[in-house]
Image 1 (cartoon, rainbow, N blue to C red):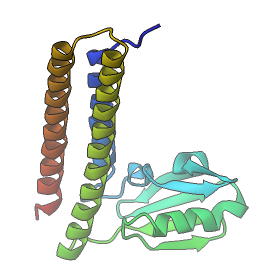
Image 2 (cartoon, rainbow, N blue to C red):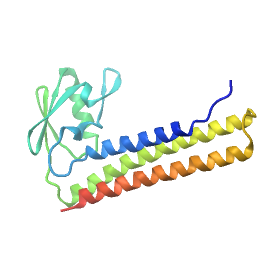
Image 3 (spheres, rainbow, N blue to C red):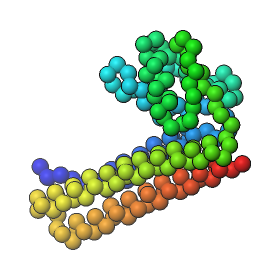
Length: 186
């Protein structure tokens, strides 16, 4: 059975990268504390990498504070380490199984740090889109090698895959520009 090229599937997968980026960027709140701020953080727990939501409950008791209630006492240090390593610039204060996070005022330095984090998220999304492009082009080459499609058709479809990739990268850059503008507004 020969492989089948599905351009709509590639578009869907690339849009998934854009959607994931937008969710990550939404977690970078600029003015107030938000429980979604910690959503992208992964915790090394029980021999696996788990999302924060699977090891703790995040609440917002005050406008400038997050409270992380860790369910398992043995995971408190792992959660604290994950928060410190997240590049969000938060300083966890542990009280038993509760970790409190004061959200600092957004001074110029803090805004620049948040922009750097946004750039990291953006680069990850671009890499994901490029992986989808690579998968699509490899599939086209395989189909051509199997003799199921001619060189001209493969070249035309490869060009379409590149156009979809370029559009996706453009969408990713637009999302970053929007978030950067939002972060840097005083």
